[in-house]
Image (cartoon, rainbow, N blue to C red; front, side, top):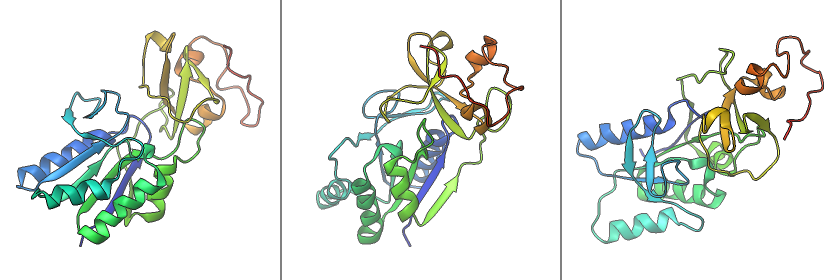
Length: 225
């Protein structure tokens, strides 16, 4: 029986790597699949992992209809045994509903991969809808680590190495962009303690805040900018 599965986690936990591994395993067994992505760091129409793996994919931008795309593909004589969607957090709620229709109406497995929450710890609309609809939700077991060595559970957006908590929800970037993030928007994964304190690796290294001396309820200075 077909299913809608959502694989989630923080940045840097191997989501895209697993997506490409699933594609490899199924294609090696003679199964045909379609891969979709949105706003990948490697550019439009590409799915990439930090291990260097890259594959072509269909760019699912705003207004893209997954169900219609598959129906047209099948009507034209194509074959689809499974669907993979990477960067699924960027999908709209309506697009996730389309993925559910693919499973229910076309009996095609859908494997969605994405980040659960944004840099403000708020659920992405696509991820929220996937949690609501998925037959199976799995948190990836490859643990990303905070600079302190603890398990990273939160995604932080940085500008010049310092964490910011305001701005548009979607700004495409990657972990470790630029020298200490200088001059660019980047991202860093942090444990909850250091996310609450807005303490990145760069700001901890600069000695700007004594990271082990502040009580958890202490007021933290806003990032300097």
